[in-house]
Image 1 (tube, rainbow, N blue to C red):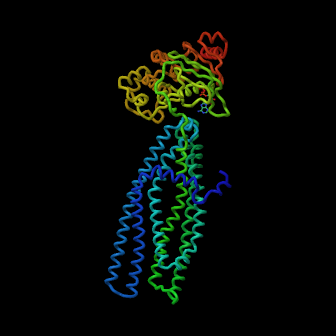
Image 2 (image 1 turned 120 degrees about the vertical axis):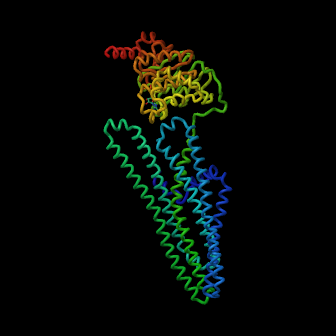
Image 3 (image 1 turned 180 degrees about the horizontal axis):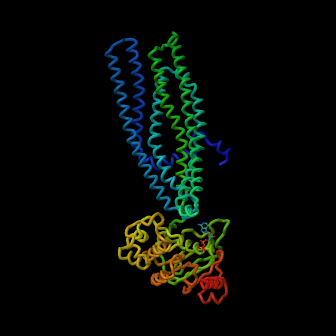
Length: 594
Ligand SMILES: Nc1ncnc2c1ncn2[C@@H]1O[C@H](COP(=O)(O)OP(=O)(O)OP(=O)(O)O)[C@@H](O)[C@H]1O
């Protein structure tokens, strides 16, 4: 945002902020309105206690100065004690309710955020820093909830106190009150300036925090590379630079916030001088019907106003920071998934039919078009293979089939049914995928396999594990977890878990993306027999670099820079002397040399 635009922004809160507050109220607080009314009622009682205290103090002072009755004095003291007892009880009860309200709101916000995250397209996660997402779900919701519970309740209490006591003082002595609050415009101006600065600073802090979290996550995840390359010192320096940057930013915001207090203190000093001076003049002058007790009580009232006013000022500093948090959190809700069920989406379809790509156009970014007018047919129940140089778009085709991304033009259909007219869950349920980037969770191998089919019986899991040649490892490791992202496993072991998952899921369409690339030849041979059994009668699409592994496919598609340059059976393609033949010869030479 440009500086010019920033300075145009409303100093206290903008239309966007109002909209965010309305949204937050409607979504997370409205349902708790009866509790909030109760809180408001208790806060009102607290405010009235102050007013009553002032009134009784004035009476008490008159008793001391004028009538001198001990009985009256004891009576006034008892009332004052009773009043503060009531205020104390309210001070205990209000946080009880507000903490409950805030924790419920935090819980609901996190529940919605997690649910919404799950619905977002893969593309969102590929362009968003994970640190930013973690910050929203973990930290920002917590801070916002605490602010709503405690700070807002306190601010309402303070505002009520200020309003009630001020109204009482105006009623008692309007002239003195008016002359005492001449400094008010100055206080408001200071608060506006401070609030605006705090808000801008907090925005920068939140963005820097997200980068920081992301940096830590990257370093922790990439620790193997960091250590092998002996880059610990560089990483430490990088992270410390960020730590220092954030320290400076937060200090700057807090220092700006702290300017609010001295401004209020200075204003209060002016007010006290005005009250003592002006009030003293009124007592001494016969024109006014004001006595010493009235002025002392008035001064006491001003003291009582100033403390809550000071806290209110502090609250406005914090409010700006929290409006930024609210805006950040709401930003996530504004991300909408584009891959959703069409209104008339079908549940069932012919999963064994041909998979047809017709005139498909797709690119990850407009600057780098990948497919334009791509036509392919993967025959139902047969094994098809996609080969081609690296980056030619093989994996992307598999991603398009299960709608991880949507095509930008053209159509993909399965069994004659366009995939965007199918329920996303039904479509994806028809696929078993052994992907290049295997995701392994920090659980046992057993649980990692079961992940794709939680209802599978133990026998089924054992069979899948045996077929994928991972059963021995399960016996050896037992229930031990495999470390974050499967860090305690070899590449081949992870691949076998992925293959076991495919066996267990047993879906009608099988996508194998470099499924056996990390296995030694002997293991690959053994798994191949089981894989042949698995692929029988299923539509199978294999992506492989090692051409020897797909030579018996029913149809082979050759891709080059997103274009289909050849297709046919292995022998046909070899005799054609095209790209496939060249790749095959090059690989053969490599093997012969080895
Ligand atoms: N998520 C993504 N965002 C942006 N660009 C991407 C993304 N995934 C792939 N690409 C780009 O799209 C092109 C095709 O990638 P793809 O992974 O489909 O190729 P591939 O043929 O499977 O490659 P390889 O054989 O190396 O696995 C590449 O240029 C790649 O850089």
